[in-house]
Image (cartoon, rainbow, N blue to C red; front, side, top):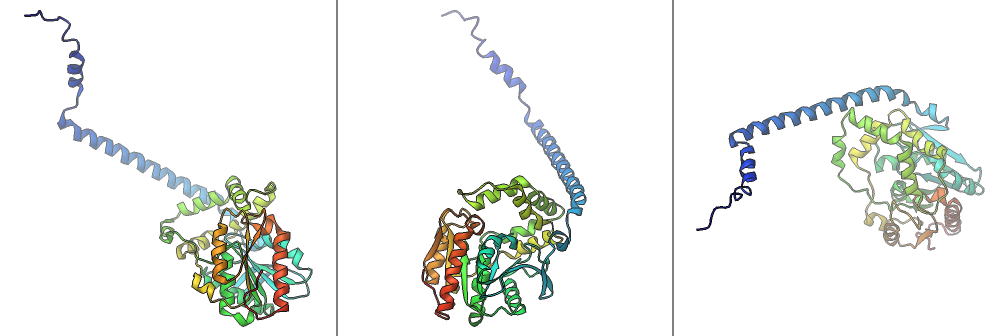
Length: 351
């Protein structure tokens, strides 16, 4: 028999000590209930604090929402029962209508318009709820198409070329589909004309006062808007001045913009199908920034193939090609317009 090691219990001692600290099974449900009550109280407190902050913030920033005329002096024109903001240059030559994309005011076309106004009458209008046009729906492809056609009729613009950027590309194509005899040609600039994907039902979760707070925080953030513009301009860009950031932010302060965007999101950003593009008979071209990081150039090639034309790539340009490379964009549109005038009614214009 070997004698017992007097230290043999030392290795077991801690285990026995820990076992004494274990909570009896009967006490565990009580602890769980306490943790649950504590968690609910914390979450409720955060919810109430967030709601209070949202209400106070919204009240404090209500003064930022102003009538469009207080932010942009005009010109405006009454079309379909609403005030439509637009810009106009040139006094002679064939007409060209420019349509911006998502959240793009019509001033983005100024560098291109100045170049084309030497030989064309050029117009750019704000598609609501963007820019400074009155926030009055519907914000749909059909509604925008009707607005553009009525705008052209109001100014007696006979057989204009319609240029649509990004979201506006679908509107330009739809104008050509609905009124081929009244449309000289269509230009898709950095836009494939197809619908924007995504779960549109999420817009139903945008509840006030939280939606208003989030909308204002995002659209009033110089840092965030600057980051978005950096992405949209692409890698080959000049520094973006603070004045330009403010120029993009300013239209968000037009009264009714928050509701207008909510209505737009709820219905989804509509577009056409590739079959629709194939059925377009008016002259058309597709122009795309070589370094577009928003809508990949592959999407442009797909739409160009459906339209039966070659894609025209703009070197060094990103998504906002009309701002980063206005001379190249104006040259592409001007050359297209000249070919259309020489060969009206020919259909696709080859590049």
